[in-house]
Image 1 (cartoon, rainbow, N blue to C red):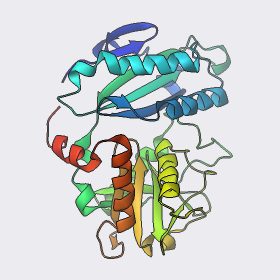
Image 2 (cartoon, helix red, strand yellow):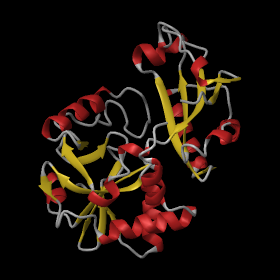
Image 3 (tube, one colour):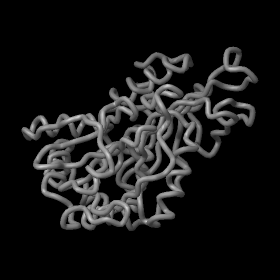
Image 4 (tube, rainbow, N blue to C red):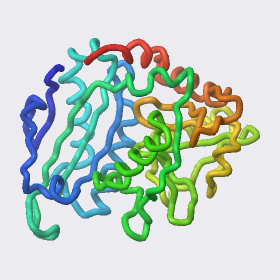
Length: 303
């Protein structure tokens, strides 16, 4: 695997040299926020939106990274440029920024922060085959964090509930991607992706009270507006999911991923739906790249 160049605490280094202090609070107690964008044909997609979300998270948890949002954006674009010569073999990159509070026993005296920006090959093999057959989902027992404890709009590494949800989903179906609920039983999100369902031609998705405000989720809203598709943010229960006409996930790398089975229950006719395919096609046209074709071409490659 190629040793990509990364930005780490003010220096450009091979990613293999990025080492986190064992006493860093990001490692010790998950005191770290992050964001992940991707490229299409080597060009970043909605990077500004990802940086804006990162800095909202930083502001909320009171970490000063020592870099302005403009500087973080410039570094994120530069890391793509520095690794462009390695992109052809893997198709496209994800770009991850993470900022920890740094070493320290107490949050209010910890520091200086650890700042890293890195690229990695998109893991097309995880989902490339699912555009045709559809992903499986499973509703986990473990819940999303309550906004009264930790606001889900903060993108952070304190994700033990996501780990447990993945294990629980696999207990139901080894191929399933987990879907979480809030404390009231309303569906919320997956472990790194939002979800939508289609009922009578209307897109329905949970409101942002108990979910991450996904950048890809926002893209779906924009595409739906262009296509004159109604979108409703609503409290949704498992019933709504099981009886939907279509279901799909939205996430940075796959963009729009059809879901054809949840809790071993077939969604409608068990095939990716027309509205899901329409959104995916429109997204491909917007970025000038056939998203499905690229994923399937590189999904079988070892990187």
